[in-house]
Amino acid sequence: MKTFITTLLLGAFAVAYGQECSLLVPDNVRVMGMSRTDVNLAEVDTVVLPIVFHIVHTGAGAENNISDEQIMSQVDVLNEEFADSKIQFCMAVRDPEGNPTNGITRTDYSWNKEYVANGISNGSGSGADQTQVKGDAGCWNPDEYINFYVVGEINGNDGGWGIQGFAYLGPTGDCRDGVVCLYNVTGNVGTLKPGRELGFTGVHEMGHHLSLWHTFSNSNDCVETNCETQGDEVCDTPPTLPNDQGCVAVDCPDALIENFMDYTPETCRESFTVGQSERMHECLQGSRSGLLDNLSCVPVVDYDATPLAAYYQQTWCTPTQDIWIDVVNQGTLPLDVVEVQLYVNGNQYVEYLYDIPTGTHEVFFDQVYVDGAQMFEVQVVSSLDEYQDNDYAWWPIETVPGEVLDIVVGTDNWANEVDWILYDAEGEVVIGDGNYPFGVNTYEYEVCVYEGCYTFEATDTNGDGMCSMDFGNDGVCDFGGEGITATVGGNVIFATEQTEYSLFDTTFCFSIGDCPLDFDGNGAVGNGDILEMMLEYGCEQDCTIDPNGDGIVNVMDLLYMLTKLGDCPLEQGFDIGMLKDLTVDDVISGDAGEPTIYDMSGRRMRGPVEELATGIYILKWDNLTKKVFVQ
Image (cartoon, rainbow, N blue to C red; front, side, top):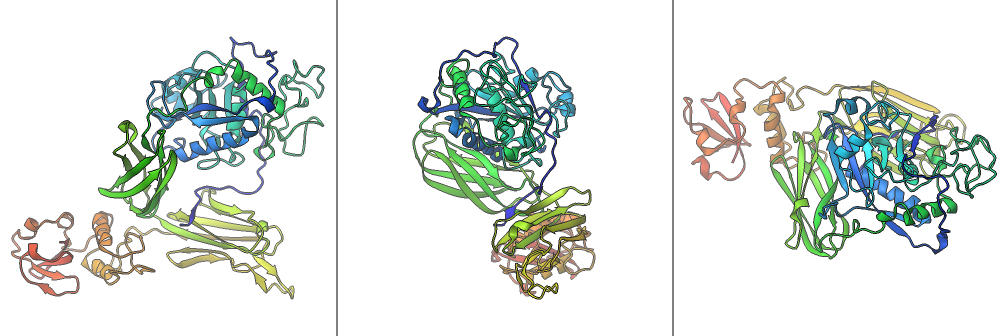
């Protein structure tokens, strides 16, 4: 399986972070001068906090309706970065009514014009009222759950720069409480924007939720006289001003540019101090103690399986896809067997899991036929399952006519010098990668390309491309990697080979034909094209004609052609109305009289239609009209 990358921006981005976060202080809670409980981090136990994600999107297929996979990656980031602080997070497994849950809710807010136009307001900018949005999205009891809201915009920023997230410093006593982040800064996989690919915005906002100020809060200079009442009230974070100009330039000489509560770029940040960790535990032992004293992370029943996440390409250009499903045993005891059923296009695919302990388990469905489908459905079945309400899930999917561009990158020993990007006609990044680990290696990628032109750029900081050695310094490489090669359907679109370059760029265009099923080239589709396809029947590798693109030519390719005929001009006498769902009763009818039946090799078949062996046949009426059917 090749690596899918839908959008990846590379290189150093000059991002002015500015006011990336909006720290909100409740009007009914005194947070400055928090009473000290003398927490010693070395002596506290690790705590686990329940979290529920509310995805407030603008439509099922909208970019801001991010995947479960992206959500789960944010939890992984939180757990990794808070581990040294002895704080962990779990996806809630029971909702406020005590029912099993996967800890994710989705709310279609496309009915709210203000939210569609400007997103959510933090209280001082344009957008829908945050209390209303959070209430409509679910707002589980904030005393017992951390509500994490994923939104499309904040204060009308169109998901761009400005406020990336916000949180209240202490409990508000109402639905305002919780963490808010833009969809494209949440987690470290999926739909993300440059400079926000690490999931650290969520880490930063969670720090606020657990009572941490910015390291530069309440400071006008680099001096503090009382570290417990000034600045961020944490004594092991030196006084500072916002450090938003990169990882080197700092506003105060002792600034901790690696601290999660500063404004340095994501790549600088990596830690909380011991003092910050102790302050968070003080909060959890005090005003947020309800997060510890509940059953939100305790499974409801002993046996409960649910389909949690699907990993696939929501929009893709081939008729078939590999689909991975995460099935979670969120009970307390192992399950002996779970049948996992996937339905799409009227077809059922079944896989089984055996001896399943609690936790997440991956199920793989190979080459699922998805062309023309708008969704696929998944059902889990277990005789032991005690809660069937969460046994079903569905996900949207779309197939768009295009071609699969295969990109193979063969690096030389100095692989870290090379970066490459593919742009579409509007200059948007389609795919890219680079800064590879040292050493000769091969990397493979797949991406869909559509009607239009594309520009590919590869750069090498040393000016030698994939060439490791040019002994004669004559521009002819003597030893190196294979370079970068792009192909469509086995045809080479471009290849850098071992050319020495600082910049390699090329532009190429695709014209996706209106009738890709016209194999005989006569401008229309008919029996001749089906016969051309049948010449490849049984092919299982490098097939010249493979209508559905699954690498095998069989009856599924014929069915694919029959369902796609409406996209192409038809040959005279090729009656689409008789091609699909043809029954025995249909073939003996009409003024043309009895049809003559031939197999695909042209032999005339004798006997009643219902006695024919299973296969593909051609009917002819009066040596003129031809029809194809499957018996």
